[in-house]
Every structure is written in C-alpha cells, then in structure tokens.
Length: 495
Image (cartoon, rainbow, N blue to C red; front, side):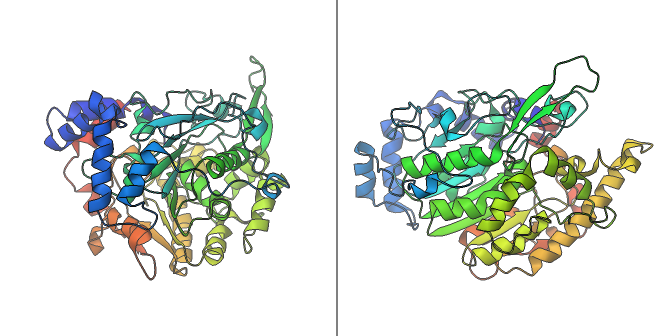
C-alpha cells in the first residue's frame, strides 16, 4: 500500500468517531489507555472465561491449562535442528545469550523482537531487522502477517524519489513500530486487530506475528544492489534486497521460541500478499502446523514466462527487471523450485498450481480487486512507452487497467482449476486505489451479483470444507453506486 497510508488512519478514525457511532466504538477500543494495557489481570481473567465458553478450536488450551500458562508460558517444542542450519537458506537462530527483547509471559501486547546480524537478517539500509509478536495464553494457533508496502528496483524507487512509487521503510524499522502512533501497522487489518468492533475473524484470538517490510523485494530477494544516481549528484545507494533471508531468520526464531502451531494462517496484503505466497511452502514445511491456511491479498504472481511476449503477458517487463535487481535467479527461485516440485522458476505464475499440489489438504486463497490501481501501476506504469507517454491520467489508467485485466483473467482461470486454492475477485472499493481487500475492515469487498461478502471467502478458507470458494464480479457499477463511506473518504482525503 502507499507509504502515506500509515500517516492517516489514526486521524481518520478519530474524526469519524465524532459523527458515526460505529467508529466511536472503534476509537474507544483502540485509542483509550485501557486498550493499551491488554496484559492486565482483568483482561486475562476475561480470556480464561472466554476460553471455557467459546467454541473450542483445534490448538486451543483448556481453561485450566490457560491458567497454568499465565504462570509458566509454554515453551517451544519444534526447535531448529542442526540440519536445518545448513545448506542454502538455512534457519539461523539468535546466538545463545543474545537479548532479543522477548518476554514469554508478556501476553496481549506487541513485543519487539530483535534479530542478531549472525542470523543473516538485515533491512534495506543495513540496519537491524526486527519483527513483532503479540502472544496469548489460550492457544497454540498462530497468524503470520506479512506487511505490504510497494517495491523498488533502482535508485529512484529505492530512495523514495518524489513522483516514483517506491518501497516502505527504506530507513529501517523503529522499536515502537506497532504503537498506535503507527496505525498502518498496528491497525492495518482485522486479521491483526484483537478488538475490531465490526470485522471479526478467528485469528483475533491467536498468537500474532507481524513481519515488517523494509527490503523492497516482496520478501523474496537476496542481493546487495548498488544503485547509481542518474543525475550524478549523489553517492551510489547500497541497498540490501534481503527479504528471503529475513524470512528464514524469523522462522528460526519462531521455531525456537514459540510452540508449534496447530493452526497457522499466513497472510498479508500487496507486497505482504505475494510474500506470503512465495514463502508459504517453506513456512508450512518448517513450522509444521497440523492445519495450514494461506490468504494472499492483492499480491498476485502473474504468469510471465521468460522471453514471453509482453502483449500477451503484460508482467514480463517487470519480472525481467526484478529478476536482475533482486538476484532472484541466483538463489531464491532455484531454491523454491527444490522445495516446491512443479514450480517453474522461469514463470513465477506457476507457483499457484505447484503449491496447490504440494499441500492438497491446506486451504489456500487469493483475492484482489479488478480495479486495483496500485499494484497494477507498479506492474506496468514504468515499463510500457504507451503508458509513460499517455496524453492524460485517465488514458494512463485505462491502459493500466487493460493490462491488469489480461493478467487477472489468466490467474482467475488458473485458480478455477484448483479445488484447494480459491480466487475471489471483486471489482472496486473507494479506498486506497481499490488495493487490498482486507485492510481497515472486511467491508465493501462484496460481489453483489452473487450476494457474497469478502467474509464469505475468508470463512471458506479458514472454516470451510470441500472446494475453496471461487467468485468474480463482472461489473463495477454496483460498487460505484454505493453511498459514500465516511471513514474511507477521510482516509482518502488525508492521503
């Protein structure tokens, strides 16, 4: 999502709460001092009560065990083995005695977890990589949420040059990243907001792992790039496209510090969506949950065979660029091919069928809007002369939408052939350039022609049986005819 989004959500919710009772509840829940003290004894007591009254999920502890966990937090039971610390892309834990900042019994609060340089983890600017954990005492189940935030592959985009779509957090991750002063992370999605007042999902009761994004490579790169300033006025930029190794280091920490999840959801939006897709085979293998789920929100890996015709495969120029810039062909993609039989590293779009075949009992889903103008702009805007030289913004957007439609239709047809990998494609939402269906709330990602809501698709992945739901909306007229949404309008105006 655009980096400017992170500066506006708190203000938007606060302003809307003055006039809308539903958002007034939201404001009270997430901005009051009591909301920031979730580790209080009163909340713990409520949790124990909820554990005994709510429908038990696979992976939930009993009420008695939950009380025991408050005093003696359950330890890791699936640690990294010596063999897993060897070979290409090993899992390298923090060294013994390293202070990672994690307190096992500090429940219901975001904890900053730091990774030592020896793990191979680093942000784009070379600073320390860190991620965030919000633990609960009543379940082993875990959501891994990979943050969105664009991409970069040259000097202009990796420095955040004005007028060029770039990548999030080029200067690293602050320790207080999950505070309410950073709403685009702490409040980004109902998946990782425990007390969202109107969009509910079972992951709100799970252990939460928030994986921030600071490498510009959709969590997939492995190259230290040196980008020269085209103007010659500034020193070259040294940028660490280190996403693949960062993900491996996060996995090593999870295996050594938390219990093996019974249920696991890997998800994220935009760069985080494709990051969750690309890493799912290894995350699923190494964390070894009993039940695995994937929801890729608006991070498509479109079919784009090496040497393909861009007219037929519009993502070919982008994929050609990132293969080189991020070092994908030198390590990450060949490694993925060894983990995921059926994946063709010469065509990133082959990952859907390969993953569906690899984990036939998992439930997998992909969703994005037909009218997405964010990821689509990254994909085509800088690569096609007719888009670069379009006579107007409207003409440019029409060309972008046409190419996005070509790529999306091919993906939709592919997913229709995979029973355990569903595709959900609504048309339009008046928020964030119709980008990311699961941010802010789960509303207005409906397919009115079939009386479907986005939550129907989410439930199909997380709760369903049989084939995962496939659905696509043919027209955006019903979406555009909706009454204005004040919360969305406030966010858009502040953007």
